[in-house]
Structures are given as C-alpha cells and as structure tokens.
Image (cartoon, rainbow over all chains, first blue to last red; front, top):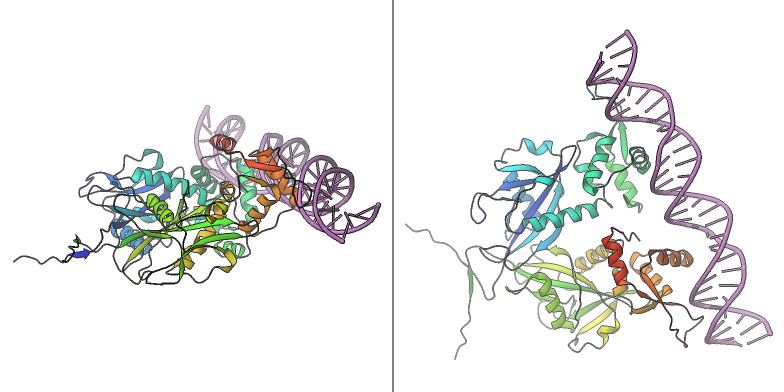
Amino acid sequence: MEEIKQKYIYDYPHPAVATDCVIFGFDGEQLQVLLIERGIEPFMGCWAFPGGFLRMDESADECAQRELREETGLKVEHIEQFHSFSAVGRDPRERVISIAYFALVKIAEVKGGDDARRAQWFNIEDVPQLAFDHDLILRKALVCLKEKIHFEPIGFDLLPEIFKMSELQKLYEAILEVKFDRRNFYKKMNALEILIPIEERNPNAASRNPIKYRFNKVKYYELKRKGFRLEF
Amino acid sequence: MEEIKQKYIYDYPHPAVATDCVIFGFDGEQLQVLLIERGIEPFMGCWAFPGGFLRMDESADECAQRELREETGLKVEHIEQFHSFSAVGRDPRERVISIAYFALVKIAEVKGGDDARRAQWFNIEDVPQLAFDHDLILRKALVCLKEKIHFEPIGFDLLPEIFKMSELQKLYEAILEVKFDRRNFYKKMNALEILIPIEERNPNAASRNPIKYRFNKVKYYELKRKGFRLEF
DNA sequence: AATAATTTGCGTAATTTTTACACATTTATT
DNA sequence: AATAAATGTGTAAAAATTACGCAAATTATT
C-alpha cells in the first residue's frame, strides 16, 4: 500500500526558509560554540549549527527556539536574530534562505542535556570546518556579538548566577579580544551599579576568598528605562 | 488559446521570500523616508517601502537593489540588511518572509528619478500608516540606524558631497534625537580627521561664509584598518 | 613553621576627554 | 552705522580614563 504524499504547488518558485542557531558559552577562559554533527546528507558527519526548516505556523524566532530544543535539548529564554544568509548556492539540495540567530547560555546547563546526542561544545579557536556556509555565519555572529556587548549586558547570560569579578573580566576579554587593567575593570564595573555583592564565600577558593557577585537585572532595566547606556 | 502556466511543486510548504528597503534621506532639517504608493491589492493605495519577491537566481542583497531600482529608479552603492520579519499573518495573500534593508541617500539624487512615479519622500514625523507590518519595520530601522551611526560614518551618505559643519551637526542631531554644543561638535569632528576643508566659498551665503567640508573616505578606511573606532 | 606566590580589595596621582562657556569675525539686514 | 545671525577659535573647570602602589587573605612551597 503506497502512502499518498501531499504536494505543495505555487505559481512562482519559492525558496525554503530555515533558521540556524549560534549558541555561545564560556568555560571560564575562552568562548565556546555549540555544534551538532550532521547525521544525514548533505555534509553528513560534518559539524554545523543546530537549526532547521521553518514551519508555516511559526515565526522565525519560534522556529529557532524549537529547532534548538529538538536538536540539543536546550531551552533558552532569549534568542536574537542577527543576519539572514541567502547566497544562491549555499545549500546543494535546493534554494534555502537561512535566518541566523545567536544566544548566550550558561555552559553547565547544557552539559546534562538529554537530547544532546550529537551536540558538543567547541572552543572558539578549535572550531572545525563547518557544513554549508556556517563558517561565514560564525564569523558574522562573532562580529555581532562584539558589537552587542557594547550596548547590552549579554555577558551575564554566559556566567553562572554567582561569579567573581575576575571571571566577568575574563569573559569580557575573551569576547572583545582585549586586556583590561584588573583594578580599573573592578572600578568601572562597580560604578555601573548593576552588580549585587554576595555575602557567602567559598571555603575552597584557589586563593584569597573573593567577593562574589550576582547580576542585578532589575536595576539594569530600571537604569535602561531612564536612558542609561552601557558603553563598555 | 489558453496560456500554459508552469507550476512549482514541493514536498513541503514553502513561504515566499521578499525584500523591503527603508531608504533614508535628509532635507537639512529632518530625516526623510522614501515610500511608494501601492498600485495593487492588498493595501492598494497605501504607502509602503519599495521591495518585492526574491528571484531564484539572486541573493537577497541583489533583490533589494533590483527592486529599489525598479520601483524608484534609485541606484544605491551600499544597502544594508538589518532584520527579517516573519510573523505568520504579516501578508494576507500567503506566508511571506521579508528581509529588510536600509540605505542612506542624498535626497537630491532621487528627486529627478524617472521610474519614481509613485515614490515620494516623507518627513519621518509625518509618515502615514503603512501597508503590511511596515510600521514595525520602520521602527526597527530607526533603532538600527541610531546604533549604526555610533560605529560608522553612514551620515555622510545623506549629505551632499560638500557640506557645512552645521549641516553635519543637524544631521547627527536628527538621527540621534539629541542636541550638541556647536563648538564642541566642531572640535570633536575635526579631531576625527576624516573631514577635508574645501577652499571654495559660496558668495551667496545667508550669513558669514563658512568653511565647507568633504568626507575623507580614503582617510576613514585607512584609520578603520588600523583599528580606529568612530564612537560618536 | 616559615617563606614565597597568587589573587584580591582599595587607593591615588597623572593624563586625557568632555563640558560649558567667552569672545571676536564675517556677512546680511535694517 | 547699527543690529542680528552664523561662524571660528580658545580656555578653564569637571569628569573620566589610565597607570600604577600597596597591603591583606589565602594557598603552595620549602
């Protein structure tokens, strides 16, 4: 018995539309990206960003979140569109337009992911050659990330809830590829008034037991509403 | 004799993909946008951004440039993608994904446009209700424009080749919606070293005959290559 | 136990940048 | 000739950035 397959017919040719998700993490030293190994052709065995085709009843944002969840088990609260890729030959199967997103997540939350069979974190320096035009997508994502962090405190999504000032500094240095003077960084960050110092101290610290902080999201949105700019 | 119409058949439903162009101009006082009056349904008679459907042999960038030229006669050297719009019901005909672009042009170059039958400049304050979700697209474009001008000297595309410092200041004030001290603005701009003062003076000036400037594109790219940032 | 090394918190002087104005000049208008 | 508008130059105060000094807490080493 043969299955009846419905066909979709248009008067003009239509491209397929997909989303791809560049997920950034931070291991305390360097920026990481989450990749999945492709299980089907084309580019079977190659690493690529999680993503997939847009359904007719969802927006691109919803598609990106759904595909990310399906392919890596990861649920992110905020995912941000940064560019669409539309070169004619970018997918060998058919014309595919990809709307690319990036998100920043706490790396620990993904490690235990259940559906994350073939998902794996890569150090940003050690990313292998990627499927399709995903190398290009990654380069663009990194540029957008650098621009974005000048205006929004997205970095806090990459750190654990509670963190040391030195960890925050290393994160900014990893993203912006610069070095800051430790003492000036501390001053500048504290002056922004978006960090809450935490009482509890870790007894097993590697050296002097430092003050821990938590990001003050409420205060940040309050300041932002008043027309405050981060400008890091 | 009936015309044979070719159909395009897919196993899965495909959205249509289009581009829309938000074209900014500057009249010396306020920001302007170029709109066209729709001649067909849906939204016939409504104002909308120039744009149209993607062909299978062109990238989205090429599509945006082509549609802009076809609908307004305008040829722009640089057009920049800023966001894609994909809400499910944004087009009543069928599912349409729109990749939106913006460009900045010298208003004088469009006035004499030949194909610009129904194209018209609108003061940014007096934009009527637009077709589809183009109101949303315009709001997003304005936000992106403000962000962009902090990093790139796009403003010069809006001015004539030769301009006065006060004109440049009015432009920045119009885009960023702030006021600058005239003397500090002069100093800051001159310190950037991307302006060439011009000798020739206009004998019919309304007041004291000011120094005219020209944007030093070569110098700017030179500085940019060395890692210089505009940061206005 | 003593010493060295690391990381951290706080502070300060020098430098640079930004801000707020003063004032004189050129041209058009009255 | 006087007035008004727009412009070019300058300068002092305020604010922000930069470059460090130094001591304390803790771990590692001897």
